[in-house]
Image 1 (cartoon, one colour):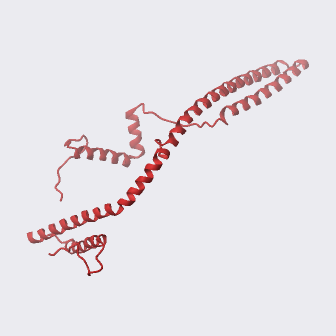
Image 2 (cartoon, helix red, strand yellow; image 1 turned 120 degrees about the vertical axis):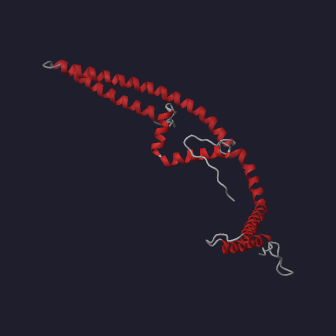
Image 3 (cartoon, helix red, strand yellow; image 1 turned 30 degrees about the horizontal axis):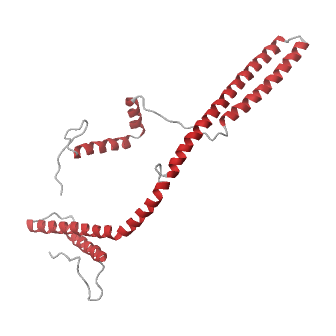
Length: 238
């Protein structure tokens, strides 16, 4: 079998673009591969040698094309790298001046806002306690004023005060939770490894098994030949 030459030139004044030539060469080899990879097995050693040569040729053609790809995009890579180098010191996520400054200033703001929130929370808690005390006093006075007009008037006055205290407590509670630029976030820390692994497997068993499979394949590639829960075997591939 004669393999096509990727460096072929058509005409004297119009040399073929090396990229076009390389890609065309791969296409020709691919078309040739279609003649052999048609579902029929290799019949003899001569055919084996031909297929081997074809496979090697298309492999080398792929390497040559990839080298041309790298060379073709090199100017763009250099331009992109220059742009990134110019902007990264300022806007690179987490490392640039913008994020570093925001993080430091955010820590200052968060500390102050938390202190203010704690103060307002303490005021709100005191207001709630006062409202509860006033409400209880008014209720006790109302129960004790049965048949006593003057006492009933005093109890009504206490009830009005209790309602005002309740309104103030609600205002203080609202002031303690809004307007400070703080937001509530929920976080978690693993404290029971067995329970957490059971939960993860139950929630997404296929994803969990894929992760474990990947871990096993990694250690087998690194040389481990016995992995608990796995069958490890040797296989010959081209």
